[in-house]
Amino acid sequence: MTFFIYLQVALLAFYIILILFLEKGIKLFNPIILISIIYFINFGVSTLYMISMPEGFWKFDFYDLAIINKGLLFSNLVFIFFILGYYSPNYDKNIKSFVNNLINKIPNINNYTLEIKNLILVLIILLIFGWIARMTSIMVGGYYHIESGANPIKQSEYYTSYSQYITIGSMFPLIALVLIFSEWLKNNKKGYLLLSIVSFLLEILYALPSGSKERILLPVSIILFLYSLKKKFPVVPLIGSILLFIFFVFPFVGIYRTVILSGDMIKDFQVVSFLYIRLFENIGLTLNNIFYYIFADRFNYSIIVSSVVHKTPLVWDFKYGYTYAIFFISLIPRILWPGKPGIATFGNQFGRDYGFISPVDYSTSVGMSWVGEMFINFGWFGILTGFFYGLFYRTIYNYFMKDGKLTTLSAIFYVLTLYHIIRGSTFALLFGGLLKILFIFVLISAPFLKKVKRT
Image (cartoon, rainbow, N blue to C red):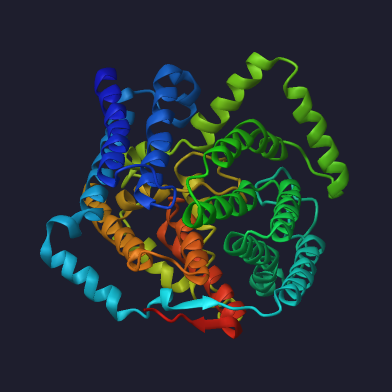
């Protein structure tokens, strides 16, 4: 049994080599390259941890390697169909024609760019309103990550009704960073580079005490993607970012998840910083724990999919597309539907029912991943969904890249899209969140659109 598991892990590594060969090199902005690497980490590396120290996973009923082997088989089959779907326009004329016709019917975003004559004024407005929204979020209890220890601040009674507007406002400083960095990429002025660095550091400083890796990962990813699109492959920044996340962000945020917060942001930050420094008193043990926490715990989607394959439909009946259909519900503003079902709480119910969290834990969420979602909906037939995912992602990539050169506007839209489609979350959360962010950017950029003259 162990041999077959190692064989499947090797197959996951082979996908990366195959895709790099097909794509003729590494392009940080190419979704299939990023997804193949992330897929290997989530399902390959995590599986190696599970078979090397199985006793650490017995609490999740992983007492038999056959369970892991079956889950890994489903994951492998999904990715094979994903690859087939992604490259299907290359070998099927009908699919190629369908994709091209679809792209041609959508207005070409590369025909437009941004022209902001008074960029400084726009940035000031974005930063003022953005930081007002962020301070409001802190005061009403919406700042701390919901899974970070115990949230010491009770949320306002009506917080859920207007939380989406606070969330929208909180995005403004990030949009300001994107505009500043894009301006530097376009003009290479040192002033904009300095402003970009200051804005970027402020984003990280704001995100760290929240206990959310997502708030840190988003600005880092967007900056790297933008740079790779407009300049070249960012070797040093990419390596630096990876090291930063492995040795600082993950363990630092991990401490936030274990301590009881006081509600005083400065005091909590000092306590977590002290505990983080203490981690490195025994460097060997600490490094081992950090790698285990990242690759065997936080990035372990192998255990999730294996559990889904093993326990469905014993725990949950097959959903037959329901989790995809709730995407349309996610688009309805809560102000229009106050009693709208919580899409994010779906992960909490999943985590409790499948035994990943305590049955009485109603705050922590566990993502079933896009692969687990396929099985929960359609069982083993869910591997066919991988084909349509691949074709969909290829269509997105072709749409943005069809002219060979992205404008400032299309580059920003693409990096925001790219960040979301490589996350591997459930469809409703992934694309519902993406559309909201793109909608915010459309509202802000609408007054500054300029049609590009193409020769």
